[in-house]
Image (cartoon, rainbow, N blue to C red):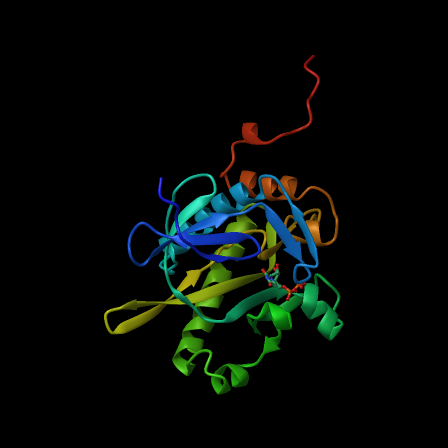
Length: 252
Ligand code: UDP
């Protein structure tokens, strides 16, 4: 069997050359990293859950008319995606203060923001993905003015969709990160949501209890990450309850 070509290996995923030109296979690893990879572990089953969850969100976005790179899920850990040119920005949307925003501005975690706040970080691990302004983005040519108008509109549409889907299952969407890519069609380019959308890249809090159901469980040692991600998948109807490992109960 021919060995496939690895295009890129990141912290949580590997990209392989796809079967057709313009396609890639995105493989979800079990590796978890935080604090710019200073904390790392292998969490069995995380890749499988994120593959399914990201498929669910990408299909949902497409159903409401938001273009994504997702084409189809291939198996437990892999999905076929359209190859695109990634804009080197992490686009963060926040509905409540948490994480780096709370630290930077001294705002208590969980404070509701009066409107969604969109932030941009320059994607460069060696610099720790620094926060940048639109002035930097324009001056360094990372994206055009038109790109940035489209990026902002996409980010807010994704926020509306994800907030609604989560709210419907009793989860608060505190914040999330997306990456956006350019695809070329003849002489035209358009922007699509790329990478992944999963509890690795969102903050998700149970509305009633405040329980964290996202990667903060790993970052802050709050218990089992797969239990948290499985809970999100179960509520969204992606996992049957019977698939989830639960403590045995006494049958009377
Ligand atoms: N995020 C991410 N990848 C990153 C940085 C942030 O997916 O490299 C997500 C993170 O999970 C959270 C949101 O973006 O949902 C905002 O993260 P924040 O800036 O608060 O940084 P953190 O506290 O995670 O360092």
